[in-house]
Image (cartoon, rainbow over all chains, first blue to last red; front, side, top):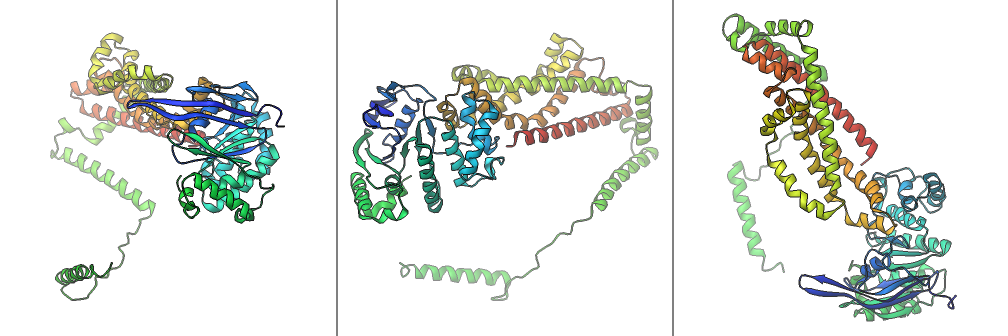
Length: 266
Length: 291
């Protein structure tokens, strides 16, 4: 697997915004290389350019320098190549849950019936049975995130970007959703890039954690997470896990006792 | 922390007590009342009261006019109005007038609402275009459109077209501004989501902008039907051969006060019917849009 080109490669991407007060360096040259099927997290303080990287990978923002490669081919500035789930669920209130999840396929001109036939079994299998024909306003926060995530998955791209998908959920729901996401990820073997403020969440979910620094946004460390999968919830108290967590928090210039502050920094 | 505060708290408590004593005279007594409860009358009683008021007022009017208490020349009287009403509908132009006013209102309403909504939505396509056109729209809004009515009649003649034009002028700007408000309220992240899925501009417009703005567009329908009717009537006031507005003007000029009342009554009925129909349409559309 390591011999072939990485699934997603961000090569020396930098971003400078022009502001009335002068140029603002949002991203120093950043390089990421993610093999097929990996789960990789980005953590870092607010304003370190995580969302900027995502917007560049999704093609919504033209970088000042560098290139985005998907399967070795240049994908800089082109849209529709990766699934991108933004912080808000952005479900359309005038569409049923089912019709919300097929939005990506619909835009790619998949016939409506075929799209619905593909989506229905997934909705059933992944916890939205009985909600297919309801409108989003009838759903709880966790359910809405599920629908939004299935919409991203059904868009059928190998690479998926998740920008703090569980940031607004309560702690209980968040844990449930993490397990749910792990299930989904192992079933679909997608390449996932995940942004979070929650260090524990990042380590628990990922194969690799990129720690970012700010001013300008850059990657200051790449920390592998060699924990066996499938992971169990109890592993977050294991010595190996805690060692990684401590290292991450050190890199974020915080000590482990202040982890709550990191969690709440959203 | 509590220690330095204690004197102040004590002072406030003393003050409180002093106030209460001066208010209730009896120290320590507390005002206790039953919760005031209003009894709802049955529906038939409410309707009976409403009819009673109407009948009473009409009777007073009739009696007043007969005894010379009220000057029947200026105010007419219910019996005369009823008579005129029968004549208006049997031998008069009632149906021609109603149909004329109705048509100019509906055409103006449809034209103004549709064109205005499309114009408002079109601002989504280009920020530059919106920035250039916006001052003109705001100017147009601030002009009292009815003041332009004589000009419109001059240009479009005294037929139906000119009434439609006045009604359109009144409704168009309202619809434009409302649809544009919808466009401006659109969440930038929703657009981002669509583009991340590889959507074209047309797809974003059709699948996001239009359905998002529909509730805005629907919300002005009821306002617009009233405006369109006002436009049609004013158009008829200025120059027309038919219509309820023209009937009112003509009757007033010939001191046929009973006919003025009749035309106003018919006009009000028409307004109520159209308003109810549009409300019905609105709730149907809302259900269709499910916002």
